[in-house]
Amino acid sequence: MISDIGDIRFVRMLAPTLAALLLATACQPATSAGKATASPTSTPTPKHVFVIVLENTPYQLALRQRYIAGLASQYAVATNYTEVSNPSLPNYLAMTSGSTWGIRDDLYHTLPATGLGEQLSAAGISWKAYMEGFTGDCFNSPYPYTLKHNPFAYYGGTCPANVVPITDLASDLSANTPQLSWITPGMCNDGHDCGVATTDRWLSQTVPQITSSTAWKMGGALFITWDESGASDGRVALLVVAPGLHGQLTMPLNHYSLLATISDRLRIPRLGLAKQATSLHPQLEAGAAKSPTSG
Image 1 (cartoon, rainbow, N blue to C red):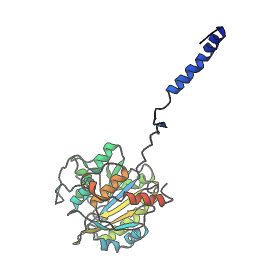
Image 2 (image 1 turned 90 degrees about the vertical axis):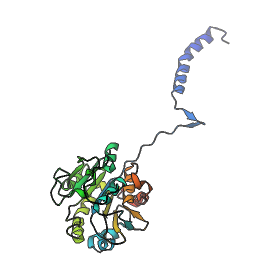
Image 3 (image 1 turned 60 degrees about the vertical axis):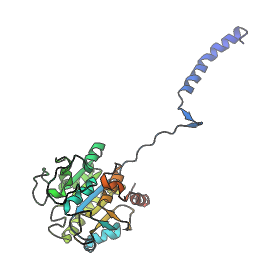
Image 4 (image 1 turned 30 degrees about the vertical axis):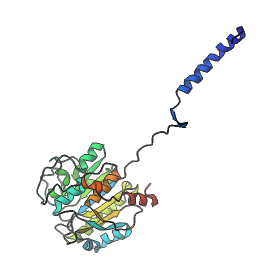
């Protein structure tokens, strides 16, 4: 109880301080069970992914080539990786949408506007498909380009602006490398018309450009595979060129596994049959953690 003038003056002097304390208390973060609410964590940036798709070579024949064998020895190779169909087109569709769409030929089919490219564009994730021989028109570019090896033109029946000539790759590796670089050599360098020895030479010139880039060194991954085998077992090689990853990957894998791995690396939902496929993302993460070059 305030009993005299001195007490009244004291309360008046104390009032501003009490008000400030009450305001500061009201502005504190809410607590739960006596614990402060944790601040949200930022989503890790997706690592760069590079994909090279080649043509018509059984596993054993590919691994007998000098440069290819050297990559398998230095990095990692999947020893139980298989095609999912034949001929070329359904395999390319499997790698980019998780489905062959029931297609069993190399003819043009307009498919729904879906697939890996559409998904990345919608998510604001950069990507490019580098095509040898491409002159600006997915449907009318000259040899050695071929439409059946460009799956991105099938989804929605349009030619995405992300499809570019392979000659753009070198400059993009120096700066502004897209998160996904899909690389398709022409009908000779991919081995279709000129054999796997030609492919081996082409890889020996192209792969060092990728592995010397900052995008690859900072936890990036390069996948090199073949669309189909031509052998009765359907087995093709999958080379996984990534910092810190070495040895043989012996689990059963196929083109849906490649799509699952790409999706997990770029942090987007898996499409189609990739949802049930085995992903190599855990192995890549473990390898990157061991590598001093992965950042």
